Length: 311
Image (cartoon, rainbow, N blue to C red; front, side, top):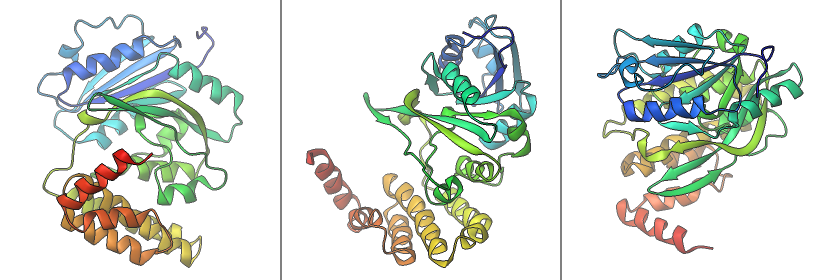
């Protein structure tokens, strides 16, 4: 429970056209054991305005409520930037409209900030991913050394719904609205160059995997994000040495390849996965996906079967 002198946490929920999910998300924020919460909902021009979707939800529990509506659909990155600009709290926590939180999530993160040193600017948690009625616990790996270096290869933080950041840093590092995908990872990398990250290795977020948008048949968003990520961060990766630069190239291609693979774009998957192996052949993680993509849907199904029966 938060006293009157405890820091205010601004919870930024970005939403587009999912009114029932939005209500559940807001209700999970209202149920938090931490009391000093400002709710900021950014409606990215939904057909049903967020203000109407929340008419029957009790918002009196919050220290403040701001519902901001974009006059046109501008995308999730622009909505998050609007949320950060609107927030007035000492900390900002993000929540996607189709995710929910365990009731002690905010309390645990504020406590972690208060115990940590001044160099810590972001605290993140694990998540429980729900897919097809089954759930899987995802605990982010421990990063013992250079967080920036780790993030250049893999998203070791996870979903934005698991993140709380100091408001001064959020104001300083905006989301890059050019990225149709991977904007969260791009933001994590840039933020990690300004502060340390702290991990809570428990699933305090419920991530509704099936509700998050799948890639469409148009794969241009991933191709564009792939090019933008390399363009922005290749000089940074090169500063770690030639070998790491190749490793970063491999992991970036692998991320694009696995996205294509899971969404049935097998020709694209093979191209990206071959690029990953060529760039960094020492990474054994790349090979199972490459082999599973070679025969398209047939080898994809075979790989899924093997995964189910393997202890």
